Image (cartoon, rainbow, N blue to C red; front, side):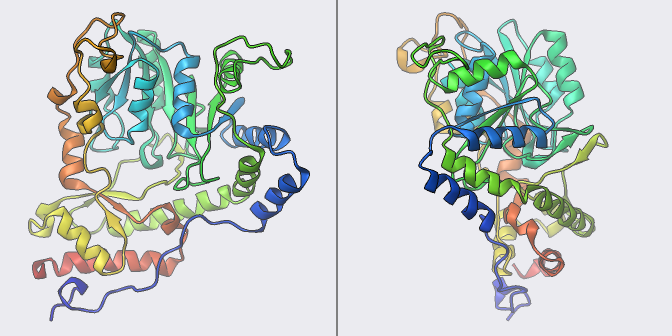
Length: 413
């Protein structure tokens, strides 16, 4: 019998970590208010939530919508991104960052990530800018903001729009201002796994009134505020949030600040303690980050410091000790089947790559993104989810104890 739970020993922990979602009387009260009022459609609660969310991120305007993927599509359409245009996107992200570009009839150009931050490598991004590039879409991965000073400088130099996929970064601040309000437009999701949730939902932030008004029109059937009900000025859609969702989100907002600070405190403790273990490396935080949200708690695993133990075995050992863990994305976005099968050949099924306005050839199967591919294949480890970071000091100590134990007895595996 070994020392590790995986080899017959006693696990460090059998108690589950904090579950998600966290909800209570605040959501119930606001939800019942709307339910009993009979006014369930796109009214005062939606407006109240939009204003609250914008203020939290120090943005001037917020436009809610039905989900985070649609939020990205609306932002791109608002900025005039479409047929024949290229949008730079990171290779390590959720698929919606790139698929929203396709749905906008534009072409995603994948950029490798920086292994020190897990965010887009801006040196590589600038090399990929062409006369077709119209926007750069950055992701503040796991809540760590990219260098937005440089992003905006690159955009200004090349006359590009900046879209922030901020779906990991509720409350993250760069030099005192909220993520999602740092470029031309920023988008968030309220899907079930997110740091505040109504099951689904999305929102767009901007400091530009023209963009906000256009995004509002796109989400609301092309209508303009203050104009007749049956007057449609754009070919928009029905992408609205409901009053019931807004009520739940308003309840979630009441504890967002507290949760954000708790996650940050616990993550800083884990970084300090786990950072002492050889082979555990964390994303590097810039000094200009004045507040850090955590949607994911992740680390880079260096198997050479664990006697060559493959990442999958390391994860298996953590889970046996009572610590939920995974390898995160097991493939970069551009290696997903939907992109590998998308070619520049003629035919409507291959739009937007086959769009005559584009006129270039793209074959994603031939693209190599070595850092993103190595993260997916060998190095990246996600521990639990963001609710784990809402736990007690004892919970955090157990996490440290588990990783130290696996490192100490690695030869048993």
